[in-house]
Image 1 (tube, rainbow, N blue to C red):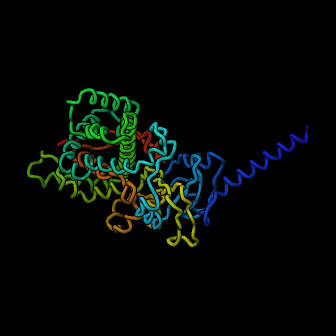
Image 2 (cartoon, rainbow, N blue to C red):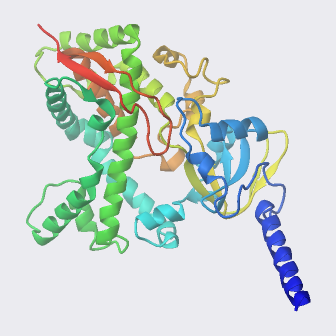
Length: 430
């Protein structure tokens, strides 16, 4: 009897040992990038999610870059992943969208959308459709022709309300009420579907019209898709804007130059009470530098995910040894590792908007990707920058800021920046 149990135990040990070996040494038609697959099933997920009280590159990424180089392998949420901070390789891969790589949602994210992961990822038209719809309603032309005065009016009202408060917590005040977001979207969707005569000519109207022809646009998918879009846009804007206000408020020279630039816009108007024009927005040279510097330091997205469509050979660039990324693996490009690289940006953790006066388009194309890169970069990029530009215009022509309580700068996929940062807005006199 003992011999039987001993045989079973031995067999189980052999199977477990083989499985563990295969986990740590995945199959590859070449040489895998260096790295570790971590623990079985969970991989190194917990290390990635750890927060850091710094705007520097997350420790998980930074430590492995020092140990393995700019490209390394790991396992996140049960999936094999190659992480890249190599600007030349990243730029090349983004230009090969649809050939070497495709956009990819992690399986866990697909479950949030109550959809099968394979179904979402198989619908290549979903990404193209969403991009076109977003650009149509929030792209440069829509902003220029219709949305600019709407944004100015909304921000005017919000800042006026804030100026009546003794103080406010900036992060929560600049983000959406996410707990009610899904119920609000659901109610609005149901109301419009039951009352077809209600037409506002907005984003939701187009989605409703397209639900008649696009099979992937189910009620549930639309609700969670719109929540995802709202969450992504507001989380990005609120975190970046909060960090920007914190950094600006610590730098009197930045405040002075912003104030001078925006007051000059008012002085050059024939009618000082007229609204902000697209030409005026485009003329905000220093403001755009401040926005870029804030986006560079914020690096809100922990990583940009792609999935390989075939084996990818990685050679050249900053690498001395060639590697192979197997077909079906995930590829994660880390914006922070690029945007906080001391080889590209002098004193990378210093808030210095003036640095953008001397950064060439070629450098920024490969080392500045707050909204992604290539053909599938974020369609809402211009909207985010315009919103920040309009916010700064109103803020520095009508209000003053006083810090009430310093906040913590925490880099985390869950927390973002500036939690606990309180400020007081007061109207300028005269």
